[in-house]
View 1 (cartoon, rainbow, N blue to C red):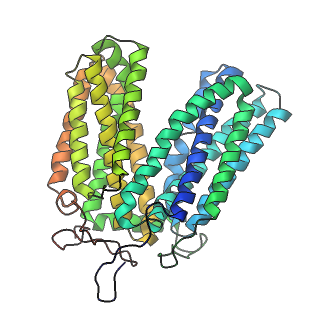
View 2: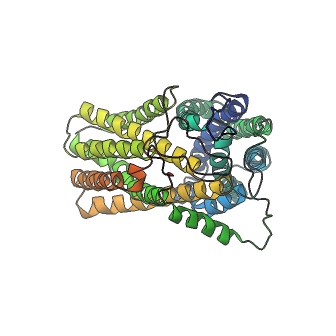
View 3: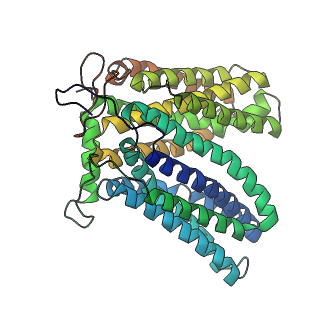
Length: 446
């Protein structure tokens, strides 16, 4: 926002404004329901079928729709009303869960039709999420001041962490008490609540609108995605960051794939400490997200992302040398905290640097790159563990070293030099122009 003489003026809307709070609290409620849905889904499948194949199919349903449909979801987010996408996706998820709960009253337990209904509900839920996430990422910068976007992203991710902890704990107790159908009913009601809350969100009248081109127009989805890819290629800073997201996302997965072997072979502990390390990672992520949400926190751009990446890489490399459980606990918490800081800085940067009419597609490409890299990294981590004879320290040292080299490379690139910290008055222009760096250059790196 700029005055008539071109000087930047502060955005009058606070972070915790009415519209952001409507969106945020609706998501918090629906995330609790999602955790109940996931737990009930897998545990019911195990009890009803006793088949590992069914569990595998249900688990795959959580990955494949996102990889296949998220780019399409980004194109839709740039063509249609983002509020309408958010409301429609949550309403459809709610109705699907309610229908699934009702099917338990009509179909015999363990019947093939009921199993197909459960798997179908899981597939539909993840397919809708592929449209919801790009729309949410594209809409958020229109609801909060640019200087507080990192805090808004932090609060959104923090609610996810809190809902994961609370939702899983409550869902486990409720499953033993009331069973899967009641949890599916609960999930449906939470999503309908979220849809109603999102329907009340008002976008600023001056906010850039998505393209009005209908989905059936001659401009294909492929050309839409090509335009987003061309935009990223024309912004060296963002393109460098996208490459780093893919590389470091793949390098992070072996840490978790091999963590059970690390606990038993390197720490000499059992399942209890495996759980402690997972909890430490989550606690570190909560701490990192909480710090980014503090009123004094600011978007520091590529410099913050680079520092967080270097610190996290150091923690992974140090795990290769540590044999004491409590030291490993601190390092894993550090991995969680730095990963959270890295993700918040990256997401905020991409949101601020991308014009509104392209933001849905760009956020979708970022999400797809992260998901694809995580899947590849998980597979390579398992293969690497087997090829090295379960030499976990070696794999951890390689992953930490390569991630450190990526941080050093990024530091010398436009993303590390020109995107460090926005000027105090820098905000995105209504036309989507990029903020200016301390030296007055556009942060696009052109």
